[in-house]
Length: 146
Image (cartoon, rainbow, N blue to C red; front, side):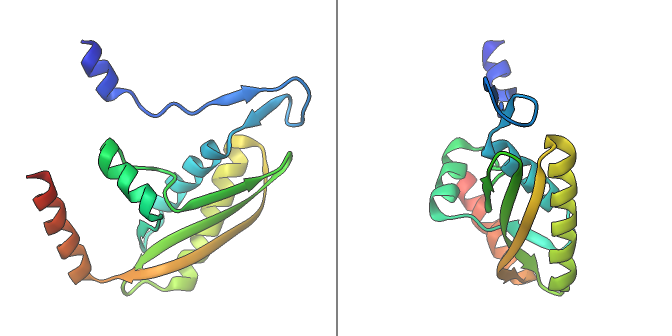
């Protein structure tokens, strides 16, 4: 039974209390903000995937978990945050519309959930995924699972 609990255990995100600070004595970790932003980005139509570094890809394969903060960089101070989002768009999507939607969703999600002011949401398009690329990725995933 313990094994099942551990398998189903989701990533726990920490909120640290600090003695003196802003935002009612609560400091929200950058990783928490990154996960919130990552979920918001994943809901936008036209986003094929998040673009993370080599280390992020390896940790995702080894852990078997999807990294919800992949491709997100957060810089936070006491009252505001700056968020960089690295994405790969689907071929045929209108990139300015996708980027605008990402900016709106990320800003709204982070501000509503954390109470922090989002100063910037910078969207960096790292590539375009075509239908052929998608089929090759699926085939490669099947081979890795066997």
